[in-house]
Length: 103
Image 1 (cartoon, rainbow, N blue to C red):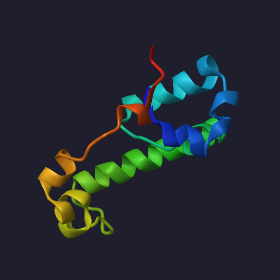
Image 2: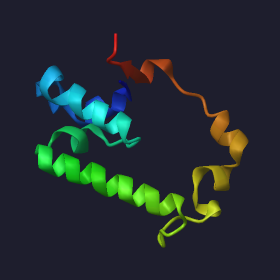
Image 3: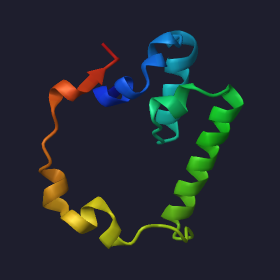
Image 4: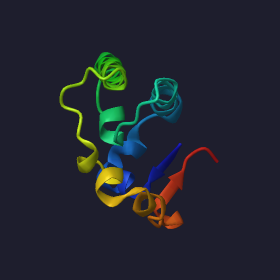
C-alpha cells in the first residue's frame, strides 16, 4: 500500500488500527473494487459503513463509465483538461512524500 505521507499526517490515528484485522482487509477490498479513499474514510467507520461506501463508489463509477452520471465534470474541469496531458504527466512527484507499507 503506497500512500502520500500527507495522508498519515492528516490521520495519525492510522497507527492505532490493526494491520491484520482492519487495514489489510480493507485495502484488499479497495484494490479489488478499484476504489481509493483517504485513510480517514477507509478506517474510521464500521464494516457496514465501509462496505456501503465501497458499494456506492463502485456504483457511481459504473454510472460514470456508462455515461449516465449527470454531475460528471466536463473536460475543462478535470486536471487533464485544464492543464493538458503533458502537465499532468510531467508533474514531479517527491519520493520522500510516499510511504510504502508493503515492505
